[in-house]
Length: 256
Length: 246
Image 1 (cartoon, rainbow over the protein chains, first blue to last red):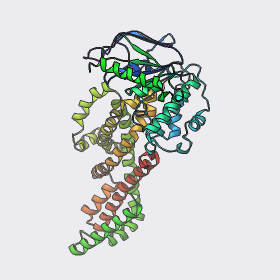
Image 2 (cartoon, each protein chain N blue to C red):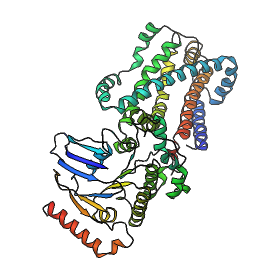
Image 3 (tube, each protein chain N blue to C red):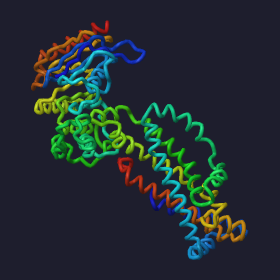
Image 4 (cartoon, rainbow over the protein chains, first blue to last red):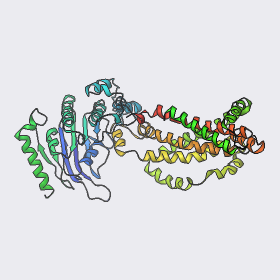
């Protein structure tokens, strides 16, 4: 589904974050991007989102070169990206309104876009019914993140990109939303790419974990984690071993 | 602000005025009660017409300023390139006291309402454009990226982000501009007109030495400013509900 071919990316006056980097993702996979601060995790996510562009090489999704944000991709950021002046309901319907604003032009909106009356069901599904008329400033972090998820899923994306979405949440809310995200992605057959700096979170969410190095990243190091998301997995020795391996690898790569 | 607090403040001002007038005891400072009686009499003797003319001029000046300055501020603030081009120009022009251009504008546009409205526009334009530009350029990039990821291009960003995000700044700019606008209105109505509260106050005070009438005009002008101030507050409560929730 996603092909990153010979990607080189650098910010102006900085050394490259990625150099001749190759990476492939198959439809329906759940990937966690892990690595130390400054290794390029978020940049890689933004390259997939079409918000940043390679210095050389290319990013293609379903064979199409990414030149702008792709209407079928959803992006959820750490601070949720909710409009503070819009209620929960207005925020959830925002993506649909943007699509209606442009119409099915194939550029901002999929050319087969037909507005669906699915907003209330997503509000209900994400447990937001009681706060649908509240503003983001009146919500807890977990409720805001639920709103951001509802807004993105209401557009029925085939790719969900998340940038440290649960990092500011308490442990219980984080676990709850991790499970919700995994079950929704599985149910809707959505490919998930999630950036995290937490080893345990990567091991919980990613059936595949891409460990990034200090730049420039050249050869992706991938950890297979097929049991991610299964009940009780976090208490298994397999989970503990994976976390230990990831930690060791990160320490080794950062020279500690 | 609570209505009760505003009424209490108004009562306090009137009491201070009453005491000062009694202490000074000169015709140039009549008591508020005397002025209020004259005010209600004058309403039927032309004060209302002067009020209406002033209201039209100041509303037209402010509306024109908002309609031109708000989109200009949004466009400049929303584009780094335009911001780089226009900011030095605004920086140079903003501090110039535009009121000194009153004679020049009258020479160009004549003595009618147009010149008075344009002078107000010249002053208010910069106040509004600067506030709106700063608000628009200060929008968190994550918010824009989040919208872009939903498919929003430049037009949708203006419709769904820049405009609503700048609405409080537009209203703040308006609120801050009301005092200036009314002051400028007074100056523009001092000459080349026979209508408007500025003319009324000046004529009654300086020519007829009818001080109670002059103060009636001052009250009318204060009510004009206050009415506009309350209107902006009302609009903010209506359009920016999110600012007033806990």
